[in-house]
Image (cartoon, rainbow, N blue to C red; front, top):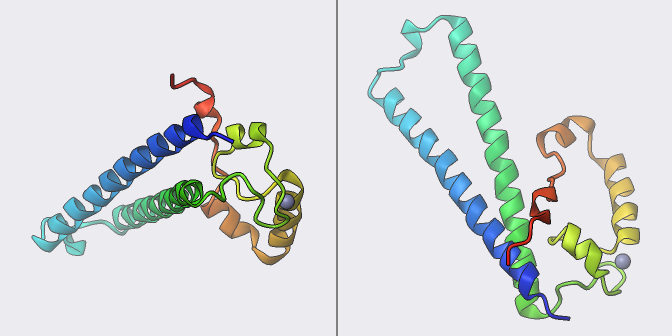
Length: 146
Ligand SMILES: [Zn+2]
């Protein structure tokens, strides 16, 4: 099977995620610098401001973490393409149907194995963690790149 188009999509996604991560990282750096110079010292802030500030940082962190995980998945998919194992289910060794790869280019498993491991995971992971790492929506990839 030839994955040229999927590979391009994964490459684009990788670049995109790297850019977003860089931006998030950059904002944190700027913020830390401000704090280091004392401009944002905790003393001149109301507790409510501090709380919302902390909440914002938590959201940022979750977002960054989510993007980092996605990036790792994309990089892994590209590595599997290089290794020639892309598009083969890691659980049962069956070829993953192309329409599944089109819809979900970082898929490691066929639908059957994915559903099985998802239900196993749901028993293991608590709901609060599912909120931090929501399922990524790849639907914007529907647009043709050609
Ligand atoms: Zn399978």
